[in-house]
Length: 468
Image (cartoon, rainbow, N blue to C red; front, top):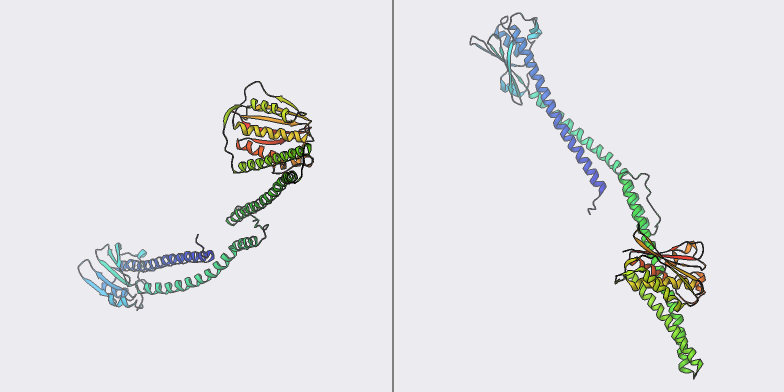
């Protein structure tokens, strides 16, 4: 990205455009003024030729040539009979400058004007020639004679030189004034960019809430300011999200360490007692059972942590075609083995409910939700497993409903965070708060989801999966 001064580049570009326009204007003025001045000389020569034509036949050719030369013109009259008369300055003298008039011209005496001419002679054809210093008009008269008038155009060049100097000096003055005006205008126009820089530095210094907040978003500066504000919102949001994620990770590690420390401490104490104390009979069996129970608890926690890590990394699913009714029924048959006092009700349709899923993972989802319901009802409540199908959405949903204390509305999303347990659940032995996030992670890996749905009594969790 080029990082040159935008202010300097803008000023130089504007001044370059102004200078170009001034050059074009000077050229146009020079050409137009030069053409106009030469046109005036040609018009003067035509007027003199017309006036002279009105005097042909009434005034001698020599006298007529003399009168025309008094106007500073070089005159040549070629009569129809073959004679020629020349009067006035030579072409070389005319190139040095236009001579002043020496007397009255043809129209300055009492001779009739062309419009009042009675001799019948008039100009029938004219041709203009010459160069930068001379203008020559050759006129053919109706009586067959030719009148050639030559005037000096040196004054045109001198006038143009003066005009060029005036234009050049004026252009320099205009450029100086334009430079000052453009500098002030550009500086004022680029003030919003300076504000952008100040806000960016302030944000970099720690003022994360500073924003530009443009008054209009449909201008160039407004669009830049709006885009920058949106970017800052995203950056600050990402920063907050990263900090929250870091805080959750620290809390997760702390809670996981705390949860592991409890069974490990129990195992260690029981093991030391078994080693050091001379126990026999029932006491030894109680300690051994305690060691086994705490070891199973620690093993289950480690397994949940590993599963959660796999969910974060991306589960490798082994999909197979299965009937979702069979998975629900299998979970219903398992519950009495682990929770004899828990009442299970199953409601599945008569038609086959095919799905492409990892059977073991979906069974783990159902098991986690049922275990959550069992803990919520202290193992003595009622759990209903209902399977429904949404043909329009192309999904199948397993509803796991219990008659426990339910989930507050403010907690229905938070319970899917790691190691989160409601206050009622903290008083009961069992889970550590990983069952629900694991269940949601597995369902989402299949393209579905797990949601906590509000119900009048108890709690309900819906497992939604794409139907095959």
